[in-house]
Amino acid sequence: MQQRSEAGEEEEKKPWASSKSSALFAFFVVVLPALMILAGVSHTPATATGLSWAMLGISRPKVLIFQDPSAKDLVIVAFAHHSASCVCSGAVHKRRDGGSFCDASAGRWVRDPTGPAYTSLTCPTLPDSKNCHKYGKDPGHFHWRWQPDGCDLPRSSPELFLAAVRGRQLAFIGDSLARNQMESLLCLLSQAETPTKVLAGDADGGGVLEWRFPAHGFTFMAITTRFLARGEAVVGVDGKPTASFDVHLDEPDPAWASRLRGLDYAVFSGGNWLFRVNYFSEGGRRVGCSGCNDASLADFGVALAVRRVVRAALEATARCGDCKRGLVAFVRTYTPSHFEHGSWFDGSYCNRTRPWEEGAEAASWDQAIGWELRKAQIEEVTRARKTTATTSGSRRRFEVLDVTKAMMLRADGHPGWHYDKRSAGGANDCLHWCLPGPIDMWNDVLLHKISDISTPSPNLR
Image (cartoon, rainbow, N blue to C red; front, side):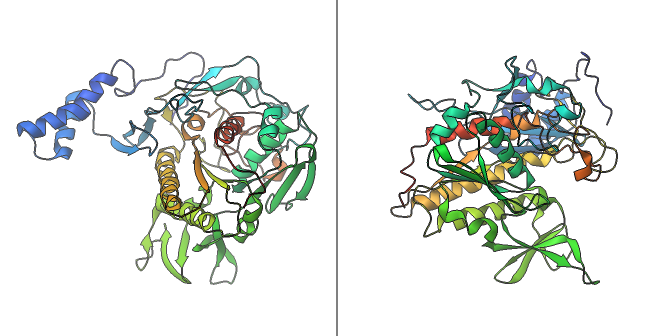
């Protein structure tokens, strides 16, 4: 895929992505097929839609259409000729009637000359693996702010965040991107109070990393878990661990399950470890796999695998008998990488210098499936809400931090080659996020959600 010029070269617009053609696209792809069926020209939706694509003069794309459970509008993502192009429309419910709720799931990145709330000079805990500016990355990625459609999402104030979580405990539960979000929040909050490290985590970045802000009685942590469910490396015929895992869908990872009872807020995330060949077990026996090519097992695929591990985590949270009654569980939606022309160790890069515009061609292989994973995660949160609503006396809540669209557009926000590569064997990192950088927006959304939720006293169980 040829790299596009960043110096003003106008990007090619797909017929269904340009604003001029959107009405025409809707007519041919939605209205006209329905009329064809009613008039008897075609007897099936598939045939009618195919005729409509032909009238538009383009080949039929692969189209994924899904409904956000919190939305009225359909979100349409179209893929043609195996090149992904996202029509990232569809935010609704900009505000609750008479309230201050802001739907941050859709919007655009706008210039913001004020810059971030912290820098590498004011955040002593900023890790070298995310300190992109120190290693030569242009600071242009600092000066963008996420502008939701129809409302404003202010940058988080460290003082306001600490006031909102006074006396509480919060955990980011997931893979290394959960830790990335914790590192962002730690930098933000340290501008208002110097934190105390409670647990240091493992040398390889795993385990539990915990910090406390004593003046506010606030403790937060990153709990590393590959799958949310318990996972064990599959042992090969040579007796050595392979790259695959046995994932026990009916057993939450004890790394976080053992700490759940003390939490007021749990932020679940993940998905990246499910792109490899894995096996899934329930009741002590294998019930499926992902990419294993074993005829005796059902192939879940990545999206169903993500759905099942999120479901397992939320079900474990819902039935936690000694957890706080007001516990709020968030699911942070999937964010794809932006590798171009390869992956970690084979010469790929992510050297964009500004956010993508809507309709831009997605270069990375996992951009397309990102929408499908987001759909699965949101549907599982909706399912957990319905299940919990039937439980008498439950005050537990399940919420979504929907950042998929915002981060799909930020190919410019990764370290790439701009970090201390001694810790990663020289890999090109187009998965994690620079600090400061676009990931700071995740905590803007988190603060807005926490402020919008009326929760009981942290001592109430």
